[in-house]
Length: 87
Image (cartoon, rainbow, N blue to C red; front, side):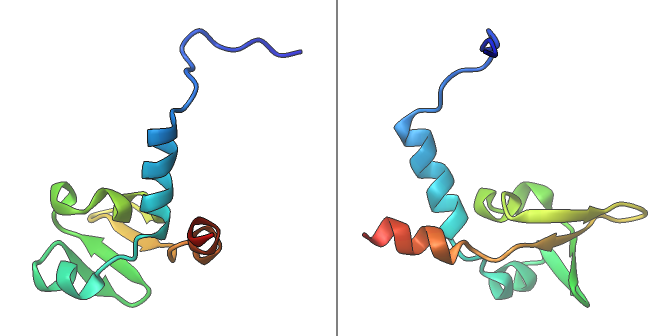
């Protein structure tokens, strides 16, 4: 049996709901590009304004390529979770 760490707390229903909303919320790429928050570079996006990137978009970053500039790839919203939440 594993012991629970003193620093780990159970996640609340509100936190689960927020995570689920983040997972199903689509990213408005056109708006983010138009406002200069991100720039499309092939399959990658260059992030210019990290502080203006919405939380739901940050939670969908699955690859980060570092170097001179930060380049990221985003995963698509969870369709399976969206279906589950509609029930």
